[in-house]
Image (tube, rainbow, N blue to C red; front, side, top):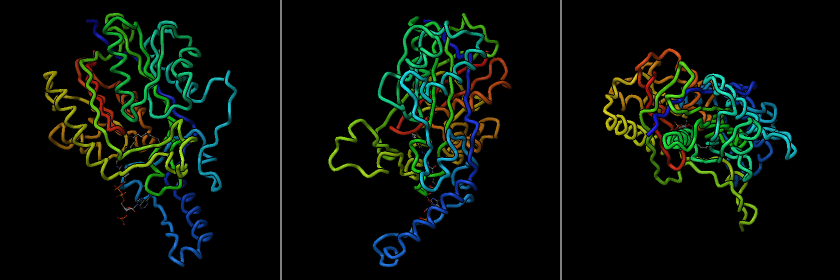
Length: 373
Ligand code: CO8
C-alpha cells in the first residue's frame, strides 16, 4: 500500500472577534431587559428569572477568553443576538465555500501544490449551510480541483474522520492528492441567549492536504503512521435542526434546533473515550505514549484537554505537549484540533511523533498518529 503523508495545512480566521467581557455585557443587558419585561410573571412565580453570566466563570470553566466570528455586530445586537449573514445568489460562492477555499489555498501553497493537482475534496465539519449540492463539490469547483468531492458530518471529530477517508483514498491509489476542508460557522448554530453555552463556540476554517509520501514536495511533511475512529451513541450533545423541522407536528421550540448539551456528562464520558482510543492506538503501533512530542487535541475545554493528555502521558502535560488555541478561538468544532496542528508543528524535528485527536457529538472520536519526516 502507498504511504500517505500530510504535506500542508491551512487556516482561515475571521477578522472579527468578541472578548468574554463584550459577550457577557451583551448577554447581561439582554437578561436585564428580559427580567424587566417579565417582571410581573417572575414575581408571580410563573416564569423563572434569568441569571447573569460572567467572564470569570467562562474562563475558569472553559479556558476561553475570546472567539472569532463571521459577524460580531449581529451577535452583539440585543434584538438579534445571532450573526447576520447576507443572502447570496445561487451562483455566488457560499460563505462556507469562501472560508474553505481560503484555508485550502494556504494548505496547497504550503505543500507546493496547485489546485489542479487535487483529485479529492472532502468537506468534513459539524454544520452544512445547505443540503445540496455538497459544499465539497462547490469548493472543488471554485478552487479549480479535479476528481471527486463529498461532504461528511461527524461533529467535532469530523476532521479526524475526513483525514482517515483521505488517507485511505491515497493509500489505495484512488486519489493522488486529497484535501480535507473543515469550514465551521458555529456561531450560526449557537444559542447566544443560553447562559450555559453562549460562550462556547467560534468560527474558523481549516484544510489538510494528504498525498503519497513519495510524491511530496513539502519539506515539512508528516507521514501518517495510522488512523483510528470510534463512535458510541449519546444524546448529551444534540442539535435537532434538520429538513423535517418544517413538517414536524407539533413544531419544535426555536432553541431545540440549535446546539444544546449536558456539558458535565460530556466532560466525564468523553475524557476516557478519547484517552483510551489514543492509548490503544499508540500501543498497537508500538509507540510509547511518553515518547509522543505533541498532542493536537480537539479544543472544547482546557480542563478536559489537560485531563486527556494526563491520562495518555501518565503525568501532567506541559504547554508545549498539548498546545491550546481555545483561549483565542473558543471551540471551533472540527477545525479546533487542526488549528492547533497548523499553528504548532514547525518546531518539531525529524522523527518526532505527534497525535491529532478530535472528539465530540455522536459521541465520535478519532486519532491520527503521524511522524515528522
Ligand atoms: N456564567 C456564570 N455562571 C454560569 C454560567 C455562566 N455563563 N453558566 C453556568 N453557570 C453556573 C451554573 O448555573 C452552575 O451553577 P450551580 O452550581 O449553582 O448550579 C455552575 O455555573 C456550574 O455549571 P456547569 O455545571 O454547567 O459548569 P461546568 O463547570 O460543567 O462548565 C462547560 C460548563 C464549560 C460547558 C463544561 O461542562 C464543558 O466544557 N464540558 C465539555 C463540553 C464539550 O466538550 N462539548 C463538546 C461539544 S462540541 C461538539 O461535539 C460539536 C457540536 C457541533 C458544533 C455545533 C456548533 C454550535
